Length: 41
Length: 542
Image (cartoon, rainbow over all chains, first blue to last red; front, side):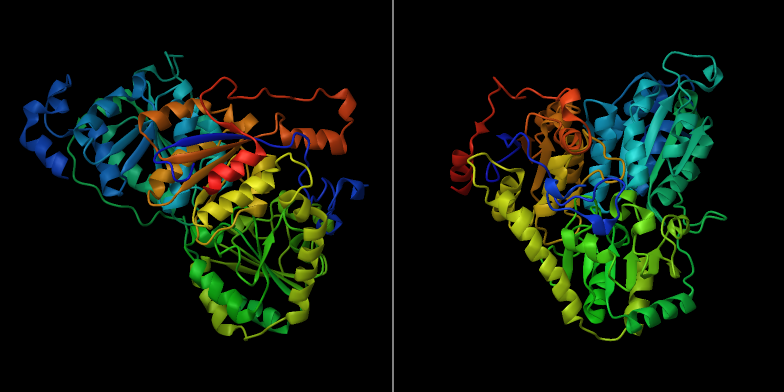
């Protein structure tokens, strides 16, 4: 893709139900940042 | 001026002669283009229509110096202009027609406004005598765009055009940059007037884009920093917009203070800088978030304490003395109360501060950030970059981009999970490398913004990382990319969901009562490669 001359489109199928962490849950302070789903209260 | 001279010398062959008012002077349309030339514009992103056709007609004589990129939707034009502005450091320029053409710009204007992006939009408008009559494609674009522009103005008399455009460019690029919209009625585009040349604007009464720095505040700030035990710098796009990357680096290096970036401040210093501790914000790094509430002096540079950065304000850095360097006085004390406000251009204030701060190191304090990174690696990063399953993660793909581009590429992202993952894992060596919709969170931003980003810095590789949802919002711009043969690499990270919506449903709402928003494989049956984990890595590395 990067060596190709000109535009290139690559569709990559990734995990369907992955979550993005760390996360500061809505309504929480920054030091309540969590690293995984289980830490959310 | 060359074109103008030619037109003046050969009046019968130019567009003026074709106008019903074929006497001396130049038309308002030509005055617009002369303004662009004088302001150094080389690329215009636009879409024509009835009310702006006269300007397009005049553009024909300027095609050797003004490159017009015909997008497929006006939203594409303004996002492209934003991408251009972000990578070039200059003003992006847009043409659109009246009515729907103008209203299609609104999302981009709002995006540029909240992300401080300098853009000048010229919209056509119906003849002045039709204003207010519900004429065909008439809309009150001035009232519609007032809250989402730094300045807007309607021109109904061509004699105003040179001065108004000079003001437009000056306002867009000075102080805290932003979008400007100039609406020009058709009669003004047609009108001939005695042109006295173009004069750039560098002053407007009561507008103070470059505030006079109060030295006593800088001294007070330096004193706080010198007395601090756990100082922490957080920086935003102001460092990049102020072209103050060097000054910023000199400051943190002399003072020895760990620094974290906001999503838009990213790439102002290389991501592997020893004092760079990562990204702030809801999905930023663990350490910068956690330790914001442990520092004793918080030094905010060119950032605006967005709620995605602060979380709950009543639990934000309450223990810290806050120094805020910003060019926009309305940002100071807006969300977070400052102990010392340093109102000014950080290109000017940072060196003043650097001179006054002592050489220091904070090994124990910096170790805390390292401990947090170690914890984040263990709990999050390891699984993201080396998952145990055969299913690809977004992080793995970004890591591969890092490996192949060696941190030299411009990465343009859309909005959602892929954006957060790209910004968390992408590596950058140089400034103006991260183009994304920060404040407004505009899905559909990336594809057109990548077009503009390429024109803004043609020498660099542009990779547009886009989710399957956002890609389908502006995918018409594939037509623009094909027509103008624009060399951008589009990387769709398809998880067959609106991933961030799904994540919130899972974490905060009752997932079972919500319909999952599943999107089909977009390029199914298209002649584009859809790759599995195994051959992605094999193919790209060869």
